[in-house]
Image 1 (spheres, one colour):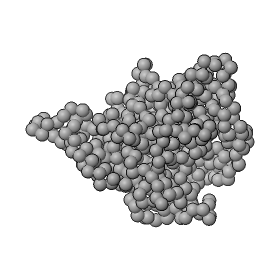
Image 2 (cartoon, one colour):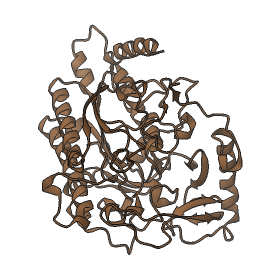
Image 3 (cartoon, rainbow, N blue to C red):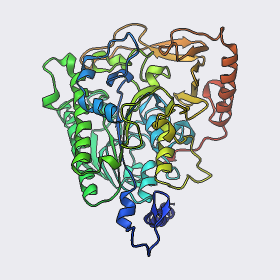
Image 4 (tube, rainbow, N blue to C red):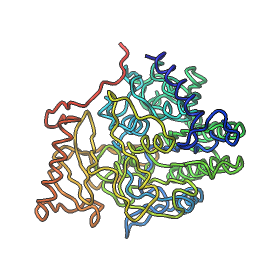
Length: 497
């Protein structure tokens, strides 16, 4: 299988050298060189942070909700908003680490490809070799590919990023809290990997504090090197922060421990600035797509070490808006309108097909279909832009269908969900236990009630009935463990005996 993928990749890279944004460049045409053709392919930079809440970015708070002070001190995210578009209704496919990353990189609902929840360090499963990642798609289109940061799609060698399209990798294989200081008898020492080799171990909070700068430098160096060589590139910078245990380098660490989260966020903003500076200094900014977002909402039980949902309901680990609606900026000069603000819904599964269509890459094989759709029209923020999907499905746990959004409406299905029940979270790294509560069937009008406070099912039975048709479609295709449905369209993850 790896040999077949390798040979297919060589073929596609050959084809890509004959392609210039959809126009064929014939070998004898003197006016177009291979370098010129490749230079017209837009570079792609995805900055993906961990557990950053919807309210943790400038411009993301509901009316009447006071945003955190640190959002006023984020010049580089503010620059992305000014030079690109702000998307206030962008969704992660699931409110948890591994599943959300699987969706971003494959264009599939994560439960379709067998990835649920957060894979632990001893997991024997990961992303299957048959699934095509965004890195493989772009590598096969002639791009140089690099990843820095948190992978979390399998820690065994078969699941390493370098075996799924990334030519370079510096990072950690799973979450930064999966280490002995938090789980003394559950996880080994946290490795910092360079490719498939352990470079060193992350043993202390001081080691954690170095990671944001380290991954930023690795990504900036990659951008400068590839830009100098006039090669199109894909840089995936997946920061482990602000996932607990939070840590920042010395210059961003405040004197008060309770203010550490703000320092972490300011360092992430600095990181964004360093990436933008690398693009500016190599004169490729105008031909580079930059996408910034988060994997899921804030881990609220950690209180002062967690972010803000900006007034949305709940956070990480729930499919209420605070768990799945994430801050998102996209900058692509000359294509994405500068300063635009959009409330049109789209989802992480749409990143893959959008980029695929931009670079004219082949669609996935018929036996491995994806769920995402091209969001180019949404990115362009036209007045007629429509949601990328008629219905968005939100799963959690092991294939529990919990919520469905259709237009302005969102159905919350009966289930058990976690909450702090009005209690504050912990301080200085401590956590407060969640309470499990029974959630009834409800219909929310997100245009009038984005905080999901009022059930309007009784006033709008026709909307509820229409969405329940989509609920049934999802159960047939993707399954639903809550109603004991298997799903006909699910695929297996990669497994190592």
